[in-house]
Length: 323
Image (cartoon, rainbow, N blue to C red; front, side, top):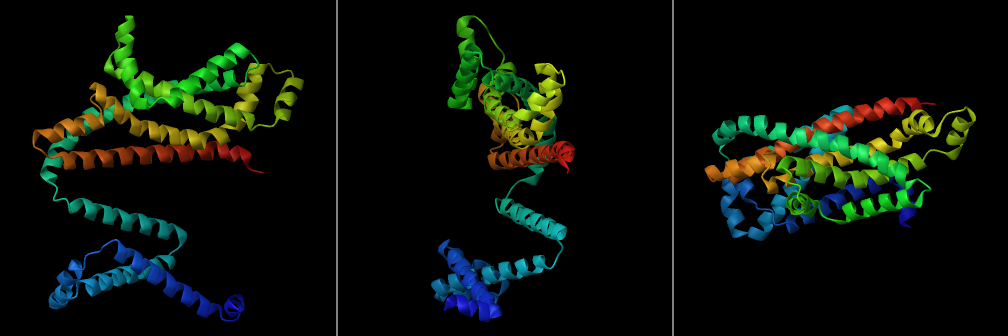
């Protein structure tokens, strides 16, 4: 019966669905405990009624927010796809900034500290991240080839490495390398310890990504390269890897972004990266939230840059897959 009604009166069914969705969103917002105080600011004459009827005031506030969201959705749908994306980004960014503004931040303090945070913290973070990414990529390539090897010793070494470094928390690895190596007579600095821990940890995860990418290439590609007289190393470099990169790049890009953020963990051993400086600089005038928000925005900007580079590299290798 309901299916027949939907087929006979599609507009009625669509409107009914919209009203149902509006009601559900209103109830969800009401359940979150939205305050009606903003209505009193916009309409001062309603302040008395809102105080006398708190439950109705919350329900009215929830309904108005839901109606504003529905109208905004409708307005965005009138734009082309690119305009919709830009509109969503702008609106959400403005809401995020309003959320931060509600913290009563000291923008003068942020302006005084951000230069040092960028010149010292960002440079150190990028230095650690770039070196770690390069070393982790090399480890992953070697580890993936080792896991595909028929040699039992090589395969055993690779599987033990990936199991160990994927099984231990990164923070624990940093402590073990920084505090444990001096116990066996090798004193290592905080920055090299952080780079080594990040490289070994993410190299283990990326080993599985590289292995899956290599195995995704049909066996006939290897057989064809062998028939043409290519050596195993030439086959891997000239035939397998260029094709496997289309599979490897997307998850590897995600690992790079995760590594950039996880570089904040090296602050526990005193490395002057973004997180360490945000924490210490905020203590000088008890302005912790200002520095944490500033550091968060810096990490976000750096991540956006990596996302852009990832998309360019994906497009670069993806064009070879055009039929």
